[in-house]
Length: 546
Image (tube, rainbow, N blue to C red):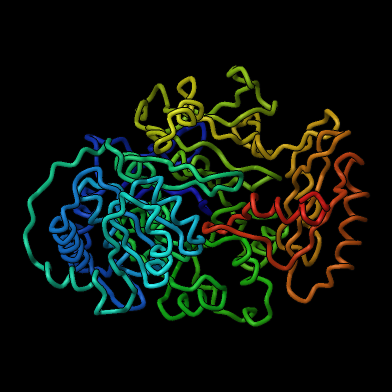
């Protein structure tokens, strides 16, 4: 999710979409692959610092040499087009190098989050049919416990950041400067599998091509930013696409931050002169509210945005108070891939607004029968390629869900990408998000949109995040429950009383939660989103329904 709409470097006036005011994705003269991106960056920025990790730094010229060494090494192992290469490691330069090497060989990247349990990790490795697994020491040990369940996994390659004796480092050293046989890359072939968060069930593997990633990052430059940090997990598809590809293709120095806490990130910001980054709302909340960061050197930040989840009204207010400008995040999803909407210059986000469609999309609100609804009516948010104008047909949706044809057909039904999210469009084109279709609560025949409840609760002091969800009920079908994540040092009992009092005063009676879970930390996934599947289990337990 991005803070501001912006024109891509080298674009010209008039390239913005006149209706939406959101920068267009430049049309391609020919289908582009990931390798094309760095060839242009190398030509334009060869001596500029490209990639920074805790253990190494690379100019664009040095990065090109390292990627070619990695590609030659993988060739020597027999990596073929279409092979799935999985990876798990802390943020560091090596993970970015590996991604680009995999793309140059026409293989398929599968990013696996570090905090997954052995069983969750095994599911993604088995489902993707990964042939090789690049793993740090912790991840390598975990996968050994489930290795018998992975018949397609041939080899685990050690990739511990900072370890010069790791197998990955030895391979890069051995093949440094060695030629390899060139390969013709099909930019429309499967290139990456990004697993959904699995908040409501088993994760699905979203498949995208190199072309898809190139389109998604074509206008993803942050104007004037030269040093951008990645604090999210680089192994995951969206993060690698936006940072490991998006930053580098625009000549932006990418700093791989290996800390996920606000204090650790701030150390990197001050040491490396970082000008912008995206982070989950709790991290930004901590930076803006904790006393130890009150005098922090954030004035040099020109770009700060939420990622993985939207910002609450209170967080937006804190942000604007600190930086003197509104926080303008947007909306996107793995299936798109990446961003679908952004705010245009001059927009101020109304409650639940998520911006305007990027210029390569047609966005519509459809009912259950696939009919387009008029402005103001709530239905499913759906997108497809623009059918007219200079960007007609440029956008392509996901190729499908890996090894799941039924789910693929459903999400791409009728030529639209069905997001599963409910919302509406205002007359002026602003899009508003209500809820995921699967999250909507049906209480006694009435639709309850979780965001209505969450908005009220998140305005209270001490509340970091609020999640509303439905629990089964014999009489009403569902009842409303709420889970609240609060700041450290807050008395949970007092907060609960305040929450109940506020909800009763400001919400219709049928929307007031009857089950509450108050916690200092709600379960989250690798993208910083609340893990609704695990959360539901905790709330059911709190309600005595487990």
